[in-house]
Amino acid sequence: MPDKISKSVHPKTTRRKSLFKSVIAGANKIDKHCSFCISKGHQECLLSPTNSSRYSECVRLNQSYCDVRGLTSEQLERIAAHHFHLENELEEAEEEHRRTDAKVERLRKQKKM
Image (cartoon, rainbow, N blue to C red; front, top):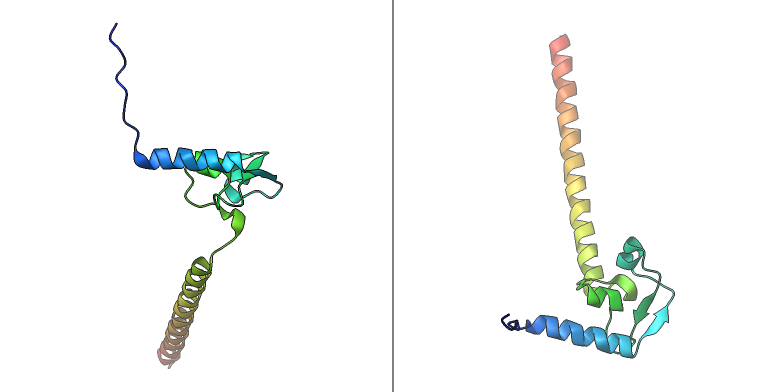
């Protein structure tokens, strides 16, 4: 039987596994859970205060976003900008709606004459 051929490991996989090991090594059990851990029903989450901003399960499963530490200032700015953009769009749509309603009323009055 031929020997197994060893497959090379991608550098990102190596880094993720290394980060996971370092999170586990200095981790503390935390009562607070991130959205991902809540959705998956994980009972125990480990978090290293020095090695990562993500829970061990998020690192292990390669979750790019873990909201355990809250939102960053960049994320808050992006959310605020998106909110203002939507607010402006809504105001424009409402104004267009008012103009259209006024036109409909005007045409109805003309039709009755």
